[in-house]
Image 1: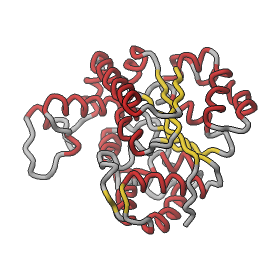
Image 2: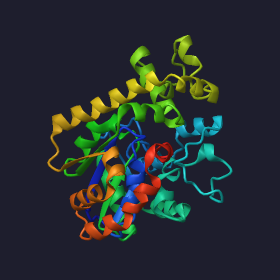
Image 3: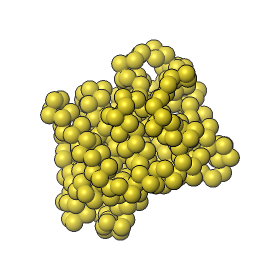
Image 4: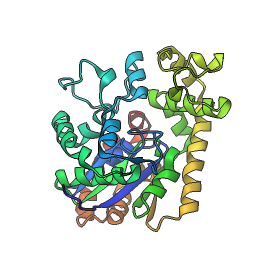
Length: 321
């Protein structure tokens, strides 16, 4: 197995701030693997220090996501899900391995085949902390793709910024922000962030996450309607009508990121604002390309800058994390 350690970058963001657009632009650089929706959405809730065997790690990666299965059941499929309609699990999305929902389809035109390749390699990983498993997997994907570096971006990763900065101490860090009022309005209309806000609120109010209830555990009556098997699309849409909830979520996520950055003081940090990127993309992309170590940073920036205008603006941003 290729044990090469690749140059790597983590993009921290609240979500709904143009980060998907940024990841798609980075994917146009031929030496770089753009990894999307991995660190935030795959193996959520598992402490990075938890020691796992290779088979246990693969079991976690290949298990379905309770959160996504709930959204599939309610018909609120997030637009970021890219699993092909002809794929092996297309007829049973509730059992779709979580790494196949977004991450692998963004890397390969045949995500099922890439999944099978990983199934033959990842269980051989040594017993080690989860954070080390993540680094090995991302390095492996980079080697399989024939790239020199990887850049990971998950929508809403500000929520786990302390863990990311701890688990990837040598990473370059891009911190992408957007006006909070605009972000909150966009979040209020997106099923993943409706669900995130609900979970954060219930943890704060009751000290429990409805998606982490163990069998036999008693929950307050007010929480029962939000359990995964009872949650409805109408309940999430109803919550989305109160933008103030999402203004609070934005403030919480931003505070998580800012405090983590202040505590860790990453050696290589680039701050970017969505508004600056849309208003004047070329210099912002040149800054980013230099920071990421692209040898062709200037030609790359010139080549992709026009796509920012095509995708930019308030309306287009609604469809991108």
